[in-house]
Image (cartoon, rainbow, N blue to C red):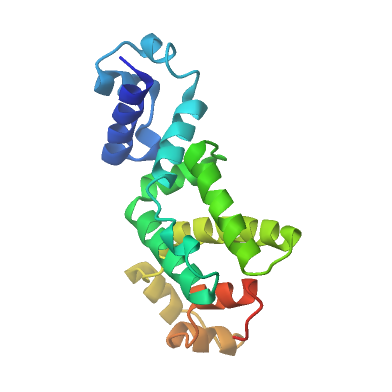
Length: 193
């Protein structure tokens, strides 16, 4: 028995049943231990979720942040992060439910701060840019499930008089010419849109 074995068992439970399935009893059953045995290695559920979240953050490729500190590098990094987040909604649920600290979370934060420093941002602006990107990525990943309109959404939209909302009607009926990610990157780096 080890903390690693418990975290791995918890990840399997998470993958099979989502965040709601992540209970002490289910994790113990998956690890083939008693629930109380888990507390020998992990102090509480928050600590367990933190380890899962930090381990997940360790799967993010930081290489684009070590290249030139330009918009193309930051976009490559963010595309990779969003792809990774969209493929792992259960882990994003953990990241959305609590702050995560650990070696991978710290390495990610440090890489972003270094990137923004290399891009010429002041220390305070780099802090703000890092915090903003962290929140934006979480929001984009969480909301990506709602990007494709459901039949119910389409029915509600068709039944709604949009006369008083012409800009929204145009937006809902068209496709954006500016990529949101590109807009975010350029704004953070002080570039023209």
